[in-house]
Image (cartoon, rainbow, N blue to C red; front, side, top):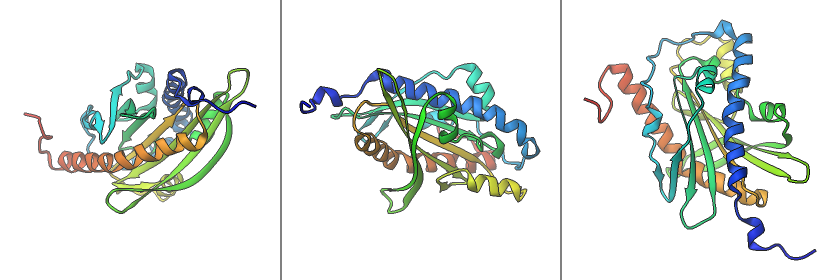
Amino acid sequence: MPAATQTEHRPQPVGLWVSTCVAVALLATSGFAYRLAASQFAQLTGAARLPQGTLSRLPLQIGDWVGRELTINAAVIQITDTDDRISRTYSQRGTPSRVSLFVGFGTRMRDLMPHRPQVCYPGAGWTHEQTRRAGVPLNNGAELPCQIHTFSRGGLDTRRVTVLNYYLIDGKFYPDVEELRSQALQFRTDVGYVAQVQIASGQDWPRNAAEKSLRAFAAASAGLIQTLLANAVATAGTGEPEPGEN
């Protein structure tokens, strides 16, 4: 077998587009089914909703990563029923690394409880290869707990998607939905907000290289997302205007 060339490991734009579309669309369809079963948790909090566009203040340039906005279909927005959300791609300057980012925010826990990549990707025809917990060191010395999932789709044109997923509950990081379920089952009423972050790579290169890109972007962005939401929630709670608003 001939040695692998550099061309074989370059990222494929189609793969990244596929992973982005799959992530957003499956978040929508799985959310609808789960909310039917979890309607008793319709409103577990009286927290103020954040203004639409809050998440859009996440910088398009994060370190050496440069982002581009993706349009989210109106049907996806309606079905996910999140208060705010963003979908972007980020490219790392000077490298072939590119990832897709989806962040959804809500004050009702049921809206973000259903979105498990290891369930919804196979539901769309992807083969689930692996899910494992991981920790990503952050710049402030903390560690981001997350799950990393890998999926493939066979045939003559085999595609692979790697997904790094985590949740923020009132500013704290969680790797999966188990904490969300326990909070809902305890009928907690003091949960202010829940956000889910999915970072996906559909690049056609070795799995460890895709995971390295996901970890690098997660390390660069997690603290910014955490601070953005914490500040926005605090401001919404006091009724003060957001920075830059009149």
